Length: 244
Ligand SMILES: NC(=O)c1ccc[n+]([C@@H]2O[C@H](COP(=O)([O-])OP(=O)(O)OC[C@H]3O[C@@H](n4cnc5c(N)ncnc54)[C@H](OP(=O)(O)O)[C@@H]3O)[C@@H](O)[C@H]2O)c1
Image 1: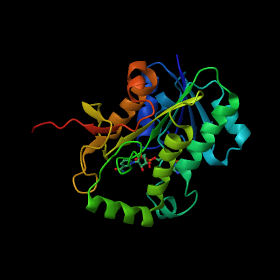
Image 2: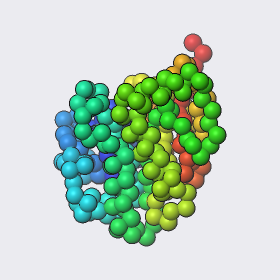
Image 3: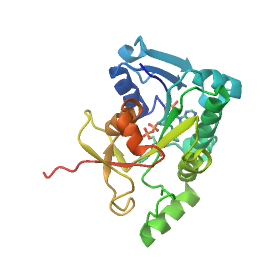
Image 4: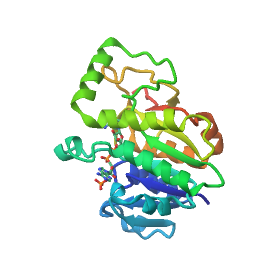
């Protein structure tokens, strides 16, 4: 049984990931500001540990305690879609959480490498690969980056893993999962995963259900062949299109 820390667990995707990990009989720890969104069966689950705190308010030593003995960290953090969430503090929510959690893992000097799975966005480019985007997409993404701080936060968080943790770290291995336009579905459906986007995320966005994102993130953590296939990469996930 693995022990997994999920941050952003109260979010629309995070809570689906938590349920899927619990359904796979894994031990899950969540650090959340509020537990209201969870059903009683999740809240009272014997394999769920709930730490009630605002993640970035924890001190470095508190974070080190929280990641002690953890096999994987999964982040579904995102800025709330309110004025304060988009433009207020913490502006670097995802980047700071990624960096501080990784540093906390390293301080603990774990025997086995710890997996870090970051929920990112198809609106970000993997600069390790020669990903080409259209001129129009470049312009629009430039404007979004300029006007909406969460975009650069998501980009910087993935860049921290890609550049600063890199490919050969002996403490942390990572995957940044890039969904396209998020949708809500009740059930996991077929989905496809690619190393790079196969669509223009501005002018021809695909769909990715949050429950499929949760399923793929859970697979990365619990299925070693899937981890081996994607580690150190930024896979893009789309729901499989049905011909209706
Ligand atoms: N919208 C799209 O189409 C799309 C597409 C691709 C990728 N994404 C990315 O996917 C990610 C997750 O999406 P989602 O819809 O599942 O997000 P969500 O429902 O908004 O969940 C965000 C999570 O982050 C937490 N959070 C927000 N501000 C926080 C803070 N200051 N301190 C601690 N925790 C904080 C929230 O906690 P509380 O419950 O306490 O607020 C919640 O758990 C986002 O990064 C987004 O950029 C979005």
